[in-house]
Structures are given as C-alpha cells and as structure tokens.
Image (cartoon, rainbow, N blue to C red):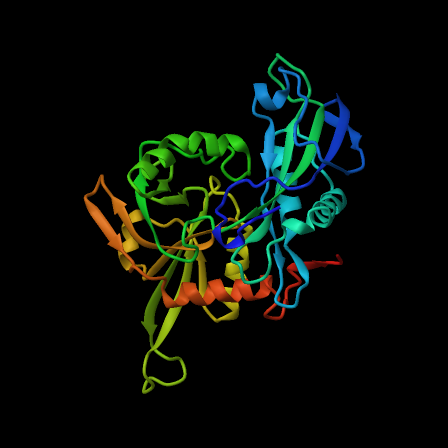
Length: 360
C-alpha cells in the first residue's frame, strides 16, 4: 500500500475489508417479521444479487456517511455514529425496509475500523477514514412492493477533502429547472433516488464550474439544499444593549438554516447549531428566500463530506443577480469549522460525548 494522504480527494480507495450483515423475514399483517444475523468481515467487495432484487427494480436502498479521525493524541475517534444509525432507521422505515439495530450498526462500525486501521490517515494530513453504511433490498420481485430480505454493508475508504482545496470558498448557481425532492417525498431521508434525481442539475452546474443551489419544489423562491449538503448562513446585526442605552451597540450573530420536510437533517448541521448556541448566537431554522442572501454576511454548505464549505458567491441567472460573500472564508464560519474539527481530532474537550474512542 502506497497512499499519498495529502493528495487524496473525495473518491473511493479500496481497503482490505468490508463488513456485511443480512436480514431475512416475512411480511405478516403489514409487519415485517425477521431477524438480523451477525456482522462479519469479508475481503470480497462484490455482491451476488438477483436481477429482480428490490434495490434494483424499485430503488429500495438507503445509505449513510460518517468519518473516523486519527486524533492529535493518536487515538481513533468515530464521530456521532449513533446519529447515523438513527437516521438510517428513519430512512428504512420510510422505504419499508428492515434497519440494523443501533447495537449491530455500532458493532459493524468498530469491526470496519479495526480491520482497516492501515487505511486510517495520519493526523494532520487533512484526510480521514470515511465509512459508507449501505442498506439494500435483495428479495427477487417483479410486482411493485417491498422486499423481505436485506443486506447491510459498511464500506471503508480513506478520503481527502470533498471540495478541492479543502476549507476554501465555492461558487453556487441557483437551479429552478430540476426539483431535487418534493416536500412530502423522500427528501428528508438519505436514499439514493434523491441523489440520482439531482444529477441533471448538479452535472450541468459542474460543467459551468459551479455547484448547484436547489430551490423549493413548490415556489422556487426558497433555499432548499446546496447540492448534496445543507445550507447555512451567518447574519450580523446591531441591537441595543439591554444593560444600558448608553452602552455601544453589540453585534448580534444569527445562524440561519432552512426548515423544510424536503431537506435531509444533517448531523454536521446539528453539531454546528449546538456550537453556535454555545457561542451565544441566535439559531433560526426557517424558510429562507433566495433574495435574503443580500442580507446574509457569510454563507456555506455543510455536511459530513465537506464539513463546512464556505460560499464566495451565489449566481441567480434567472434574476440576473449575483450575491457576493467574499473570496475567503468568513470569520464566523472559520470559527465554527475549527471548533468542530478540534473536537473531532481530540484537540478540544468533547463535552457532548460526540466521539467514540475505539480501542485499537
């Protein structure tokens, strides 16, 4: 194995093993009855599937993404995997799938890490070990309906930054021609169909050198998601001090992020919200109009893959408008980025118990 850790991008690099686990059951009176087997380690990266498997025929599939960090103290940390397990369970429920229990999920995570330690990038390389938990329906079926058999797999891969250059700004272009997800559809679940449905828009944006900012599918006036990530905005304003009218006005920092049933609840966003509140900032989850970008000081995409990707500008071609945020990451976003990374790499106290240290 000869990997240049600092040159890694966000792409698949094969490791020694993956972890697999199977479920077999039956539908009885609308309830899926069955049980999961034990997770096991295998070097075989290929799956033998019937051509009529429900994951292939009807898209009965869900996935997750989480990171493993080599800390400043040399310890191995997995970030908030319990939240990934819960989110996979919500996705599975929406798609009528059996979901691995939190116990099975956690056991499989530890097995994947321990059997691929050689692929955990060294500290300070900017790279991490990414885990992709995958859940697929394997029952052969032609009639429309859910399967009764499922496979849970964890795929490890060392990765570099999602966006080339890491913590640097990216340009987004507003899309109103493709609906990423409907409000009462599957947008709030992490299922493959949401991403495939967005390819028309994201690939068209990439050809122009941009990334894609999706709008809501009903009115196309509100911010939905930043490609495959949540949107966050930082807004500074002045308010009169409550202590004394004679005192100078102090800046009020507001952390803005969209509220919608079509947006995936981001574990990274949830973590950043917690940190923003610790800093005394006001957190607002609400619908955010595109034209409100004029009043936002800093903007970014956030998610497991990119952590925080600051936005330098948003181009709205339909309105002939460009919203500028600066060519360098802003002060507030930079602060949040380093706060979260310090916890993940063990440089700061993990007050919320977000990281599990794996004894390797």
